Image (cartoon, rainbow over all chains, first blue to last red):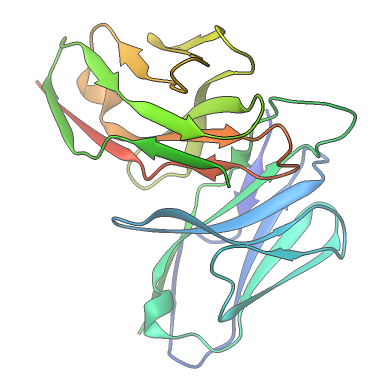
Length: 117
Length: 113
């Protein structure tokens, strides 16, 4: 069974803390993504990575950074957590788009609900 | 750029009612289309997909047909159950989008017994 695993289901952090959200996939996928989900705003892409050490900004990268040192692991970093970063964070992975391969869906982790107080 | 528009919720139905959640898209070429479902407190799960025009995706009694002429991918189920209560997301992966999925805003479905 394919799996994307996020390190925590629930997390409470203080304003100004450095926060690490970890995501691991066991499917040998090239692509990995971090989204945040907020009521009324749907899913918004923060960052994605299409290869080890490669990263691209999504729609809302401000206040976040990412790290991908190994193919299976993609970390989201909140350099200095703020209350407006309280949200549900979703990690996903998918096969790369190579050689005309189409229709490959993204697989999601269970989500991390982060509260910044 | 690519975009997905789906009906706003919440959609409230009685058990055994017929469900339609509308989804339309804008994309160049021939995107692949997906429906995801999110149960309370969980991540997103793929519900069904279609990769070319006139394809019908189906799973767990849900169906959606890829309509190129109307750029639509409406989700339907003949008889909903309380356990179908969830948020449903329509998404596309563009033909030339490389690695990206574009999501609609989500539609919350509430099914009452």
